[in-house]
Length: 187
Image 1: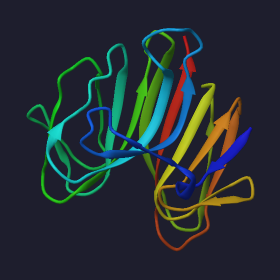
Image 2: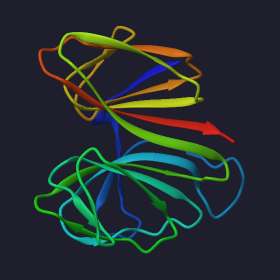
Image 3: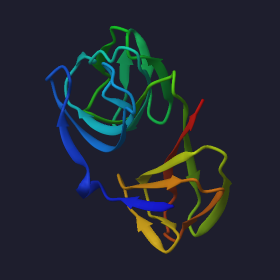
């Protein structure tokens, strides 16, 4: 199944620490009663000031900067399009490297899922085919327009693919298509 998730439909949610808001792209609720309300959550947030990250006990996190100069997480620089993996249990201090930053983040339960996040680019007027082995795939557009199965996603839109074995991604525009592939599979 292929689903286009438009940024205008993302649910705006306050950060757990109350210091900002996030645009929730998609989530899977936890299937068992526990202190963890979801199995995974994909979101994007605008970080306008230095602040500590929220604690998410029992979760792992993948994070990347999609717009802006970058972040410093516990003294370690995170530059645009680099992916950082860390524990939600960690106390993580976040400082801006310059201007405000838009990030893309996945929070997931590592006891239930394996996850990865990769940055890709596709030249103007070209296409590529991805073989997909994971159960759930997201393709989040940073710049350009992505065409998949007769639907077009623009910047900050996202395709969600479930149980697909391959996907053809087309860049029909005159600029480079920049995007992230986020993959989730059950253990």
